Image 1 (cartoon, rainbow, N blue to C red):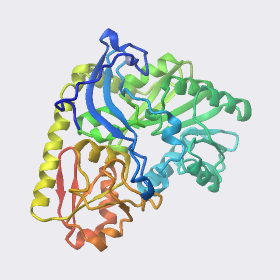
Image 2: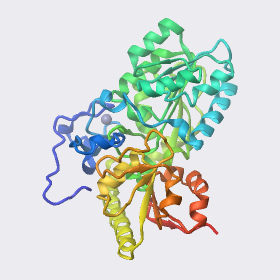
Image 3: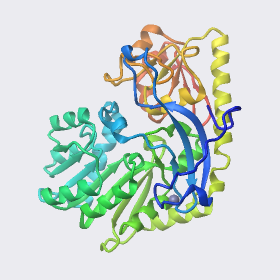
Image 4: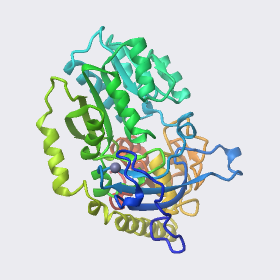
Length: 429
Ligand code: ZN
């Protein structure tokens, strides 16, 4: 559901404090941007025997803090509940693996890393990124709380500690392995429950001239492209460079470079260093901060229309799917990812519309989507069941998936890309 649902009074923000600057809801610094109602955990896929049990649901509300510019959700689901058995394996995506290989080669050359260096990655997943440094003879340490993926990383030769990254972990690493020349946080900073502790950990870990490279979805992309489905309980913070720089300043760091990259629907790749490091900030940092000020990304008004645009997208998408069903068309979905769970549950699209979901991850196949409880099959099932349409939930990998599904498309299958507005991809010639 979307904000403004009749009969549901908006819950108060009382008691909530900004995850960055600590501003209190009571002083008017925090504004609600979007209320997505209550939803199940987006990555908590269900086994068949769990279908009879009720699913826990949690409020999903996005607020903006004018004190520091950070967009964030209000609910913190205990990280142990969220991350102990993680079902997102980075290596299942060709795009991710290729991106990781290029990033590792670029950073190793740029920072002149070698056998005497140390590269540390937070939320190192299955070692998809660190493996490239390791293969080049550069010492690495992964920090990954989900034990099922940590095991896979070790199989790649990537030394991995099973824990969360923060100040305490950083101090333990320094005591055992020394300071890091490079710290990597690809798509994790937005997911940590205590981002100040995380950034304090970076400051404690980095050597004098060490750098941290942080990738996080860019809040501007979410707003401009109506990517509301990137909102889910694991994704706590929605960053602008302004909001990220506030964290850095507070902990003795500063941004020295920034780049906009296409990953995950549009992300920021920010390089940070100690405030006293020799490296001077690239012109891109001041330029993007200026651009954000001009656009007003640091003010609540920038987010004012977002809720209405999400409501309009819901109308457009459910109307399209409803017309197709009325015409007797069959529809499946592609991508058992968190954003798919958000879209289906918040828009109320379930078994009445979709027959099943397919996903390339063998770990997800045989399970069911949270909330809507659609079964998850292998992508090959598209050829077998031959649905007329496939709703592309993982639109961030659209190019890769459309290429992989050439045969389904050649046989007349159509894809529906839901954002920024529903778009039908006609069959391949
Ligand atoms: Zn704040």
